[in-house]
Length: 327
Image 1 (cartoon, rainbow, N blue to C red):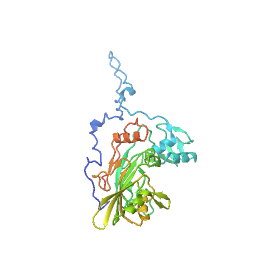
Image 2 (image 1 turned 90 degrees about the horizontal axis):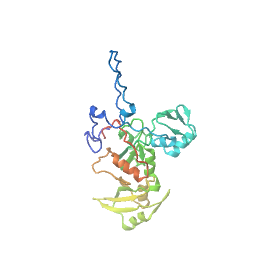
Image 3 (image 1 turned 45 degrees about the horizontal axis):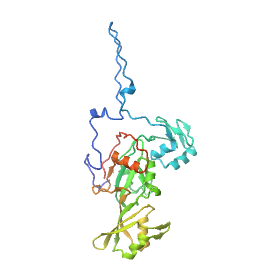
Image 4 (image 1 turned 90 degrees about the vertical axis):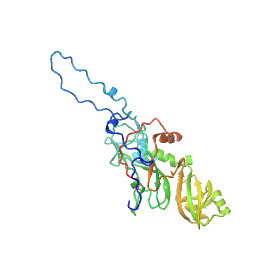
């Protein structure tokens, strides 16, 4: 987009290092070696017959393990199409086919099966493939949606492009709110990150006009009544400021629509700027500029999934998705 700085470095915290040379990629895990071209039989008399080619399974010891049969609704959720419950409903309604036949509730699928949702072919992700996770610094003026009647800029246009899967947003941020937002290719992981059961804390930097008196801060900590029920901050700290503007750091363990703004409005204060600086264990990196993203490393993703009690015997899938320069 015009007018926004671009990160042009190829080896930065926001982009992984450039791929290895073509020669070094030949023996990479998950890439089976190419079978040697067959040669014509030698008809010379007295020459011993050639040895048979080595067994393919021995030549491909480093080949990525094939996925096991998995429940269809789980596969679709892992691929970021929707939640497990939503996928069960689509299957029950006859909206999913496997190899041309209508899928049944509870049915499993194998690697290589052609799966279509509402007639559209999808590439499902078996659980032996590690998902990808992004930290994105959302600027103000972007919407967290793929479909917008007003055709406003979307965060999805700023993310690395994927092949065979899609990014799933972990929660949302308002159009005029900036800061940290997580994306993953696993619908199951996204659902766990958002589920109220885990009570992941969200922390925000809030700018208001003037200072909040102690009694007003206490009301926000004890709870205020909103249209959709009571809400309160789990912490509220003065972060200073200059002139008429003053900053505060607040945290809460839920993510209702415009909740932080509405809580301040409930005590008669208007928020002039709002920025999310932390989501659960992830803080917004100080060197991550607006419109830029950083992909979590394999060890970080494995730890995250272990914390949520998810299967971690995954293999890292080599990908060649296009990584665009961030705005």
